[in-house]
Image (cartoon, rainbow, N blue to C red; front, side, top):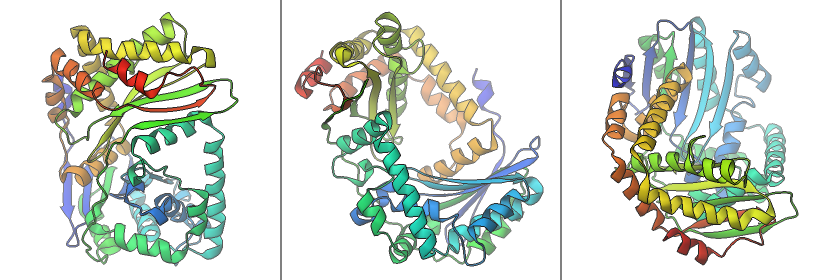
Amino acid sequence: MNQHFVHEKRIEITTLSNGLMVATERMPAIATATLGVWVGTGSRHERAHEHGLSHLIEHMAFKGTARRSARQIAEDIENVGGDINAATSVEYTSYTARVLGENVDVALDVLGDILIHSAFDANELAREKGVILQEYAAVEDTPDDLIYDAFMETAFSRQAVGRPILGTPETIKSFDEATIRAFLAREYTPGKMVLAAAGDVDHARIVDMAERLFGGMPSVAAQAPEPGRYTGGERRISRKLEQANLVLGLPGLSFKDPGYYAVHLFAHMLGGGLTSRLWHEVRETRGLAYSIDSFHWPFSDCGLFGIGAGTSGSDVRELMDVTLACMTQATRDISEIELVRAKAQMKVALLTALETPGGRIERVARQLLSWGRVVASEEIVRKVDALDVEHVREAGRQLLQGAPTLAAIGPIKGLPSLDDIASGLRG
C-alpha cells in the first residue's frame, strides 16, 4: 500500500530576503491554479482586548483597499472566472484564490492588495462588525455549535487558545482602525507567512510577483503566543431544549509530540466511523444518540481529545456511562483488525486531502509554518505503520489519566458529577 505515497509532486520553495516563503507545486494535468497566503497567526495570538480581531481582519480584507473597492475586489476575481476566500483558525489565517493558470497574476495582485493595502474604511468597519455580531448571535442560538465553544473555553480556561474565534460583542464593538493596524504590524510579519500555489503555476513567475508584492514588508521578529495550559473543568448550561448536547474531553497532544499518531488512531477507533466502538454501542446497539464521534485537535504546543454527542434528557446518564465504559475497555482490548482498519482510513484521508490543489497548498503552507519544511507523505505513513496495538492501548491509558473537561447544554440534570466521571475514566 505504501507505494501510493512515494510519488510526491515536485515542490519548489524559495525564501525571500525578508523571510516570506514561496512554495509552488506544478500539476501538469490541472488547468487551474489555486494559490493563497497563510499567516501563522490566529485567535490564540490575540491579547485580551483583541479577542476576535483575527476574524474581523479576515472579513475586512475584502472590504476595500487603497485602489480597489469591495465590489472591485470581487469583480477582478470573478471577471476571470475565479473565486476568493479566507478563513481564521486558532493558529492560522489564510487567504486563498482559484483561477485559470493564465490568470495567476490577477489573483496574486488581488491577494497582495488586500493583505498589504486594506483601507479599513470606518463605514465598512461598522458594517462588518454588525455582520459578525449576527454571526455571534447565530452561534448563541445553535446549541451544537455553542457547546464546542464552551468546551474549548473550559479546557483552556482564561487563555487565548481556548477563546472562541468570533470574539465577544464587547470586544467586537471596540475595534477601530488603530487596533487593527497595530495587530497587523505585530503579527502579519513575513517570517510568519507562506505564499503557496499549486496547479498550472510557474515557480519563477510567482516568486517574481511575490517579491514585487510582498518583498517590501519589513522583517519583524515573531512573538510566540502564550503556551497552552490544559486546565479541565466543567460548564453546564441548563436550557429548555429538546436535546442535550454533551462534549467530554481530556488533554491531548501537540502535533509535534511523538505520541500524536497513536492518540489520533485511538480517537479514530473509539469514535471515528461506522465501525467505531462508540458508534456501534451508543448508536446502533442502544439507540442513545443519532450520532457520536471522538476527535483529537492538535495544536503546536498542546492538544485536546474529545467526544461529542446529543441525546434526550432522560438518556444523558446512560449515554455517559456507556461512553466511559467504551473508553476504558478500549485501552484494554483494542484489536489488531481495528488497528489495521484505522491505519487504512487514515491513509485514505491523507491521500484524499492531496487530490486537489487546494488541499496540497494547505498542507504545504501549514507544514512550512510549523516545521520549516514539507513533511513527505511516506514519512507520515512510516510513523503510523510503526505503531502496534500496545502503542495505541498505552496512548489511550495515558489519555484517560488526564483531568476531564465536560461541557453540556440542554436538559442535563441527569448527568453525573465531574468527580464521578473522573472515577469512571479510571475504570
